Image (cartoon, rainbow, N blue to C red; front, side, top):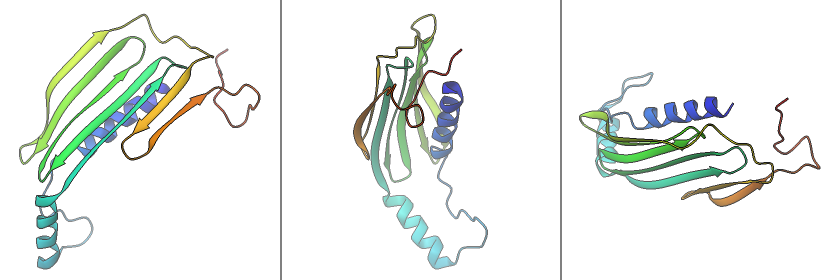
Length: 147
């Protein structure tokens, strides 16, 4: 399940970092006024965000940070799964999306489950919180479902 969520997250990262295409038409043709507004908004768009999940219960980590200034997007995403820690740095602009650096480091023999661990979540838009196992409530909290 963790690997599925990781792959899905990485696909979202790639989709969000796709190059900006002027005059994008979804289901209908844009009016000249709408095209001009979209062009101006793309030129002046700015944002900066980050997020990180450190899962000491399941021995994993996912992190992402990204900055946009007009048509230029720069960022990175990282993950570890008990086997490797991988970090990918990317850029997206009028020349498209491209990886500019990738680091991979072997870190172990696989994830180690820790029922006493804690998962810490933080993000620039959501703040931070932590999750622990609650062995008293089988319906609402994460539990070890391995045989």
